[in-house]
Image (cartoon, rainbow, N blue to C red):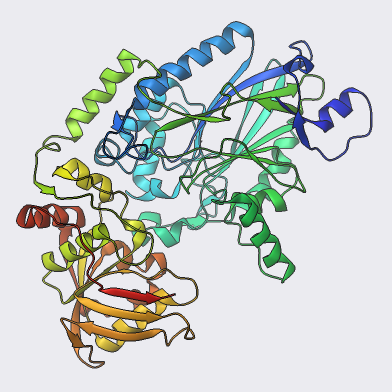
Length: 547
């Protein structure tokens, strides 16, 4: 059990001081003085409501995850338990709820919304991937949902008003106690989306949204405020905080992009639920100044988060929290540990069968695991860009590390496996550019701390001891040194061709040099595997980086 001093101090009629969290005994929060609010939270579900293998536990013999049928049964049990005991109950999601599995992607989110309706979510905030099928599809999903979508920073350019399919906040009331929940989408979404998908959308910063709506919420008698956001808690919060403070001490700008920055710069928020990075934390991060608590779950429907909050009945303020799990706020949904709800399972199976026809047909095999990497070469990275280059009949292909989302185990390969590697519906674009343009593009991707790129049809040597703009030491295409004035055909995804993920130089290419092939990136990989099976995973020295 954790508690906050301000409530205890208020209760004792002593001056309110800034709060700190310390261990406590649950007896310190008797029901007649404190309201218990059972809170279950998710983020980055990415369509992961069907059964799946926990390959992150054991890639060779993965245990099964129960998905939405297991999560739903747990949620409904806890809701009933809260009702019987007179507790509050809250079920929330911090965004990126559907894009990433056949069920989620091919239903354009409808299957996941149907599941969320069934288990009675109270609210979700909009993630960046909610725009992958355009804002009109997001609007359609909001109309299907039986709960509100929050995005206090999402406005229309044409009207200057909040987008009509979202709300800035909701206020939940339990036995006369009000809890305000303000939500915001990721303000950097336009840099991760096609322009037509966010057309007429104006993404203000998360802090701007809070400055506008936090006073409005508190004016309605709210003393406990939750901020539900797709902004993230750093992989290592201690390092993230130190880096933030160092930047501020040097006069750097507030970027409004991380949950830690928001918690530090906006007083008056008690709790933040965040997401985006797919990294879960068993204990919340507490801002040292404002004492805001930040909770974040893992991704892909593999886990649930559960925390109980205690609200002081007389003041309506947050007193403390505890967990039902000894390990902390989150737990993995193993089928061996939890029973599924049969009715929910049937609904999910309907969508799975509809979306995955032919997904388990064997299309080839791998002689060993095909693994990816976040930098340099990897067998999976090489396979994907080789498939892209060959399908587009290009001289060279580039891609980003973030586009490759999973490894493939040794043995049979099915379209289901390929979908996990490349879950997004990106298509291949072939562009005619000079060698000088390609060299500048590579320099862009190795400047500063940029990780580089996945490459095919080339041999590249980088020296990071040299200054930005001169780190490219050697660049060969098809075994020959690149010629600055010669035209080459570059294969790239349409996502990167739009200038996303730091590839903004591609937006300067003349339209008459661009060929939108229409080839689905995922299908190019499937075709490549069919032609080249068995796949022998390998790296061949095409990218050498002196770090």
